[in-house]
Image (cartoon, rainbow, N blue to C red; front, side):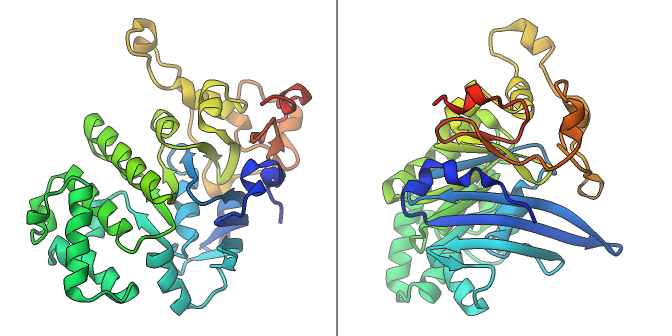
Length: 340
């Protein structure tokens, strides 16, 4: 197996990490074939840090994130290490993992109506993990549930309502309250603003960012929208074909991308007030390769205008590109590596 070696150049590694992902591979079996969905992903996250994960649909973002807590299902084979407070979650017992999933790390899923039980009140669903994992009595858990709902902008007087009685944005707020219920150290937010309008998206992301800042919670935020991540996350990881192809401080990655794929993503958004960009946004032709069709060399090469013959052979791993930055591209020249 191969691994993205730029972890050693990551400033997070100078502090004691909360989460270390080492050479993570997720493979599915389809028709007797091993299909790679995540290929050698490595990164570290310190307490209170926020990492955004961006990329087109099918690039492995959600698969990578869900596999951290072994939520990938029985069809997947997962190898590597996921060290949470030094404990490998890929090999720990199921009883221990169940405790970590709420008290240590929690998930905000992209479809609140799929994650919330329509037959139970919001109160019941927030109280349950606190009773089971924190050992709170029912009365104390209900008091904390009311505080959590108020903190995310849902009046606690509505806590005995059912999920269908809330709007889409309100349901996402309920999901955030649930994720915070057991005071976790890590939250994984898997496209938490999907299908919400632009104004509500901004409100939800700002709300989540505010809550995690207050509690010093580490966050992995997944979305296809680079601009949203730049405003809410300290660092940004761009994924393509199951690998991280660029990693670094969010603003630097967005404003001065080093990988051609990151550059294409950053140019895909029309500029407000610029008619030329609105009429002809600089998109990217084609689609990411199917996991079963990934060949040797750089997986982005078939869509890359800067690809050379050498890009199509050998492994294309992350290489250092300045303080806290790395990119999986042959065009990351030595002069990039000395910049900050």
